[in-house]
Length: 435
Image 1 (cartoon, one colour):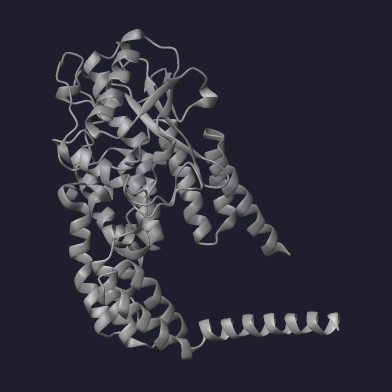
Image 2: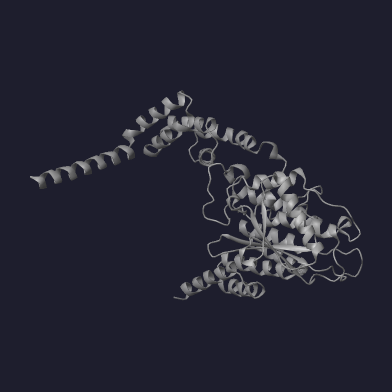
């Protein structure tokens, strides 16, 4: 008797589960979920209605009424990350109906409402290829380690960090005394750039690089200052301070440069000019565009950051703000070309534009740009990037032997996990091809 009761209970449970599955995953439940959503929508409960319209579409993707009311609810509800993504996908769906048409009309107004006063920015220059690379704000304050150096250098670099912190209102930093504990490392090295034959030559004061781990998580930013200029002279306080202000912008995630000379992240701000001369006392201040760009960068959902748990509903969906991959690449191509036109003898511009051409699949132009970059490379960081990008280009073109040689050349310059991972991937492809 007990056995029969147990079997009856098991059968009942199975039938209930099966019935629930059928109800939630077949077209017969679509009108029910739609009507539930419509009731909430008519009551002004837009956020609550969205999940029911979505469930209605899951069971019947052709429910045009559910598509349309879902779009209406998405535009009237809270613009969370998920809702931004859903509206963007609706606008770019393959179904051409009233829902898609209305979603398209709402993308720009939504973008403008999210950006607000931050609309004056150069956010496309902050994008690394198509990636949003930045620190997770939950890990603030960022830990900064200083190698031993001249007290005046250290003091002026710390002041630059303080300006970023105070002016932004959200960036935070803390000094640590062990290099293994830091997020941002400040290093110093003897000058190794091009020799100067006149007092008016251009020279670099510092460079910034990043390292990622085998999971492609941001591990560390390294700002390396030269100890002196090409003439063996110490840098002035303004040179160190202004350069630090610029390089910290890179260390926080702005990969490229502004094309506005009033911005700290201007394309020429990392090079010596009249305001960077040892005799100049001009001090840079972060512009509104600098701060708008940094603020917007830290509101965009990152694709590369220093932790796994980066997802928050209050972040912005990048494609909605920046456009699709193709649009981002076109914008960046335009920015980098302007940079090269202004600084035709600087390797970094050609390296940047090569990554864009490679992402577009234009290997011929990418190769030409890397060849030009090689002509003007003056330091190990530039030479590393040239070899690494050549390796990636050859890898994407399935020329694995050439890719391996370039990756090994990059590794000789800088032994990091990113390059080691690339080499392992290339070796696996070669091994598979030989089997």
